[in-house]
Image 1 (cartoon, one colour):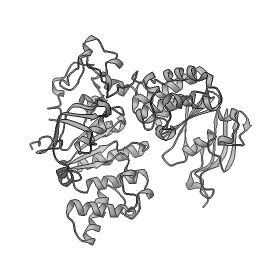
Image 2 (cartoon, rainbow over the protein chains, first blue to last red; image 1 turned 180 degrees about the horizontal axis):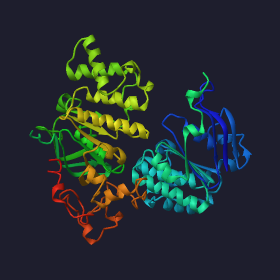
Image 3 (cartoon, rainbow over the protein chains, first blue to last red; image 1 turned 90 degrees about the horizontal axis):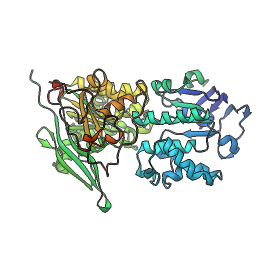
Length: 225
Length: 329
């Protein structure tokens, strides 16, 4: 269970990007968050995944208030989340082969023994063929790299998946394949999903419930100046 | 009124990248299509299928390690054999206007939109004099629905939609008969995608001598704008169809096209199984066969683009009126 209460966040305290946003993600729920480009939905997704410290407001993870963000967050809170970003090129270390990219979170949390098994499992779940696993990001397409980024997000078996415009750069077939892989994972594990995007047709098809940005946060126009 | 012949006629266009170690990447193979004045042809396919390479070939913008074959005739000029001098002085901007994938990266960051537009107009149209150029730039901005009061802004001060319009104004500056739009809507949100393609459409409707070749993986955008559709898979055009028939009834004929449409969230939302083949290691037969539900032994042989579809087992029998030659007649 993830609760955001009255979260205000941004990159300049005088001009926050997100104002007083609140939402609740129940265990196992798939929630879509819909808004136009530039509305602040990606910033809110980063706050929800503990990747950006808000200026004000509270975040509760299974009832426990989150006090620390990014690398300072306690490991059991941090690893509760799996995150997939819009642009796989910006989210992948260009030096790593895809197999190492997927295994990175296992390495970082001292679970090297699980690497061979988990990488094989997840490559299969995300539709990556074994020959792709030995390549580096510049040797694969955007769609193939995004499959690897999704595999990386799932490798620690997160309870909550945050997908920020995961498919915005991808063609229809790759989009359907990645969404199917997320849904298979959620069926197996009961994980919850926060899917952020601008495509209503996609979010309505994918999620149990889709909220529009103006139902979640105050718009910048309402803000006192 | 007699209809003019096609503006652009592409025949047997192939592009090979020569890689170190003698590897050859077959980015485009034997592409054949036309674009007539007043129409929009959407070239669709998954990322990495060779669509953007095809666009670069038409503009002579391929890197040095490429080999091309075939022809791409724009009027009496073959774009594939024309020299760099001809392309630079008579084609780019004058006969083909490019609307780029990421307009914000296409514009010069250090200069205002006005200064870039004036420079382009001076170069392409021969308008001289400060006042005349200023007026021409404002007219050009207006034509692309770019607000004149934003002309003195730098590219980073523009939203994605306005940057797209600035790039369109530049592409239209030399009044080129062919507009080539390479993924013009990537990264834009849905309302902006719709507005952008509606505006592109308007440039074709406003001047029936103009044509648009739009390269996109966004099927919804293609449906909104296109008169005809060319589907590309693994470097080959596998289907050419009338857009209304393709997106509506009776629907596409190639199993790959059918798979692409079925992947849309407002349709079956089911992916095509497997991954596209490597362009450096294509099978001898049909490249789609390993992913195709209709494949059988005949698919080890390459299907030619017969009529409007390159498949041994198209979904419906051919309709005599649907060949690319007379589909627009």
